Image 1 (cartoon, rainbow, N blue to C red):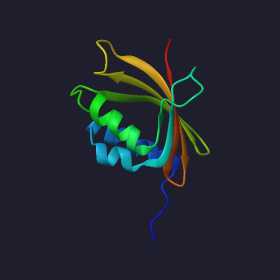
Image 2 (cartoon, one colour; image 1 turned 30 degrees about the horizontal axis):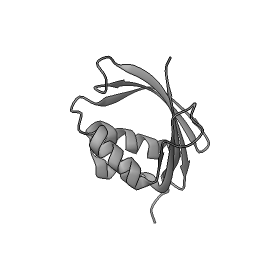
Image 3 (cartoon, rainbow, N blue to C red; image 1 turned 180 degrees about the horizontal axis):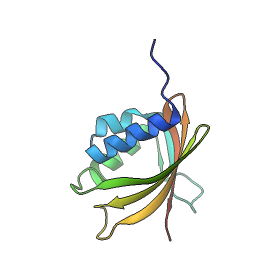
Length: 116
């Protein structure tokens, strides 16, 4: 019997795959119907694993210096909040808070809050 993946383990798996630019490992931890939000927009910017796969394969993992450094993590039940420093996406590094909702070992929703 396999041990269920905890919310923290699911988020760490996707972070490790993100930094390795490994689209298969990255997308495997996302739910088929995942919703990605970029507040203040109320509607999701992406819906579904296929959309997340396409975006990252064409807009993120093509950037050789792309890397997200975990600065701090908070786990509260099925919510994981990561404070990250992202490099390789823009000329300067920037910080972002990312909130992940995890159900049954899969990321079902993500909210990105860039630092002002």
